[in-house]
Length: 531
Image (cartoon, rainbow, N blue to C red; front, side, top):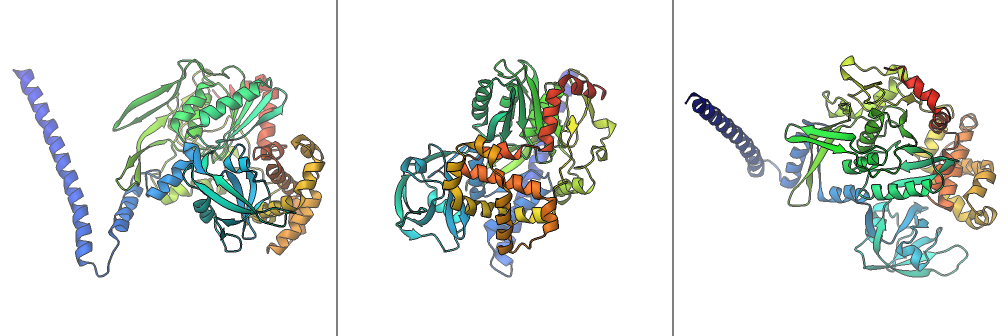
């Protein structure tokens, strides 16, 4: 009888607690609805109730954490497109140059390439309507060229050395958005992959990239996650599975209303043995940190660069009937050693958003010793038992400071104002045929093209664009400017991934990665001192 009494008491308390909770929740919902009703009936001016409700939701979410957010239906579409891995359109990379749509290149295998559209073409009309010289914007171009698969659009092209406009009727199709920016061999035996985001197609793209490099006798891999803001957790798990042996924990998530969910490696990995290096920086977040944390915790590879962003919260998309969504944080994720990577946000959203800038001002980008973690955040890797820390991003095993030797205000402004990109489009438009004849392929261009003369043209172009020439600063940044210019030209002449084959040469983080590979045993031993 006594057991029955206590059970009945507990059951009664449970139901009373739930009733009180439900009543309080309903009271708050009623209160919010009543406030909207009062405003609608009595406010001095006419109000947009939908906008008012959205504003209230946005402000309410700011009280929770920096990553819970409200997105309109339009914002949902824009957010999902790069992560879903495709959109529907005509398939061209373009830029707007001198108020004209300039085609950088048609996407290989896409509908524009199939009908004969070429790099350097200028779109003058779309469906008979003039689009040149009318101050057209990128969004205008998207709205006119994108559309449902199977629909048609006619573009009128102006091509160099052709007097008349050329009309192309193009049938729109699905156009892939690739998450891998570059795949190539840095040196014999060492492959390089630059990953931009973790999208729905990332694991398939990565699998193909691995096959390509393995077919070229790759034994070591440098995976570049710098400025990779993340994406789908599941894709990070699939990539980690390529490197970790079966049964190893990759990540787990947990929240007050979310049960502990664990993700483990399978036996399907293609690169579980070779030397592995991951490059990270302050722009590496979320899924990048899941992958980096798993590799570091299992002592599977070496992390090089600067402290990552520090996002360890998992969002769930909760839909509204109008197509908008609530991206609500429902759990935290933890690395295999139990580290929470999320940086603090107890001082509010505004202060949270200043974190990266605060790191810069505190000297963290230049000096590793400026970073301090309390002992309470200390954890140990699972094989070598090295000390690692949670509570604010992934700390690299080997620190590489931000490169400021070639930096100047002139270098900053020529990039920030889009001058170098605009100049490159002009330069390629004028010299494409000559460059293609002179340099048959990227290797020939890489070994023989000297960018000094192009730099002189760039400086003159920048002057016309309103950037005053400063010879002292140009001399400081000359090597950086010529390399960046050469990289842009390579990208526009051949393929977007070819940018990195030029740009990576001599980069401090790449040099450090190669040094670690060349002196693997010695550099790994140095890490064991941190135990």
